[in-house]
Length: 130
Image (cartoon, rainbow, N blue to C red; front, top):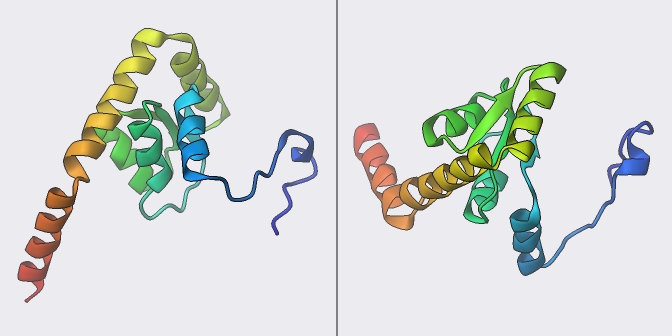
């Protein structure tokens, strides 16, 4: 169990593990997925969010998450409280920004992380190492 800090505890609802369909519906219903972690090594929640048609807002200090957003065009990043608020407002209040971000992230996921693309990169890496 991991209790949230006391100052935000009243605003946190721990759902525990949820059904995959409920999780997909939550991604699809969200206006934006916020991933504040600096320490991500892949960022699976970004791809799940993009597949559901939802853009992302990530911590700029996570080189992995920021790179996914830069390459895909599927999200924005924040470096401090001001850019967090600015990015959040932009995504939530401007459908002309939100929809293209979500579409670009979805296309990136379907193109770069389809089985054949991942397999080809894996084989190329094995060949380079051998």
